[in-house]
Length: 105
Image (cartoon, rainbow, N blue to C red; front, side):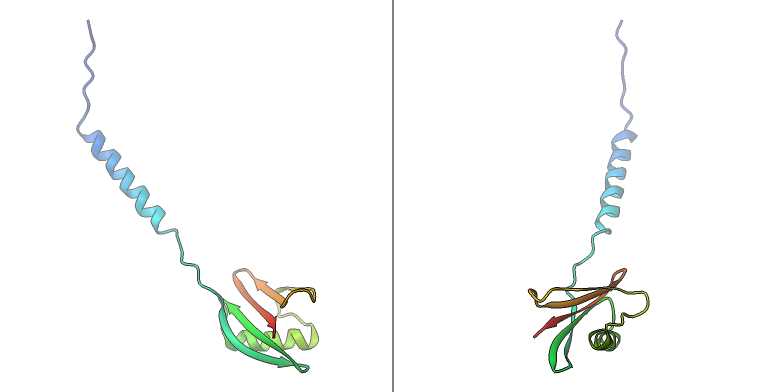
């Protein structure tokens, strides 16, 4: 005697629904990559620097950069790293996703 296995018509519909939900939620997780904003040139002690900022306004990043370049005082809450003279990057300061940095010109 053989057992008869019947497929329910609802199983393919449920699988299709789950697949659509999975695709819908995974597509929303991707975010566009945006380059840092160019805040323009800044002159400190006769040297010129190009200031760039990401997730922070230029009106905030430029004074922060000027103060850091002039007196080596970092803004509150930021972690800053200076780079060697072998690279054009002078420093980079970050606070989570908020970043600003200077490039020697």
